Image (cartoon, rainbow, N blue to C red; front, side):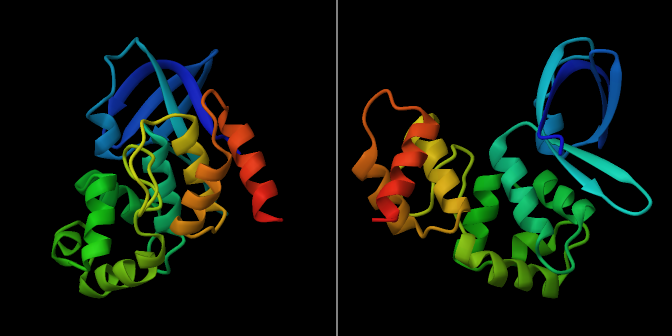
Length: 196
């Protein structure tokens, strides 16, 4: 799996961009939310990536933030939502707006996005409700106080992605966190505590 790329941005023609990584040109598709933040051609760029392998193609998708990549991965797990629709969602609403829509149950905003009809919007809200707010633009977890993006918020997001509920994530992370701990140390200690 290709999880991240850092290289020189050669060209950008939405939704495609070409990234030169040590002489290898990677064709990457990205949502407009990422395109809006791209540097000029010729500058260095780092993208979080997700590789989709199909019988007829290998497709590489790139994102400017881990929150976008995580939401993309959550979206393509939903029946009837493929990578193109997931890119359309990320191009039309921010990560925070999407989770807010899911939490409120309002499908009107989603229906306005290309490829999203009423039934798909309702399915997204219904199936994503359990995960609503697991990640946000700042890397926070639903129901938890916002903390600056760093080791604690990354650890919380990782614990939530492992299936722990927000209350459990907060309890575990607060119980083990000490100033200066790395993300990995917080996760390891939290997992040890969860198994007690």
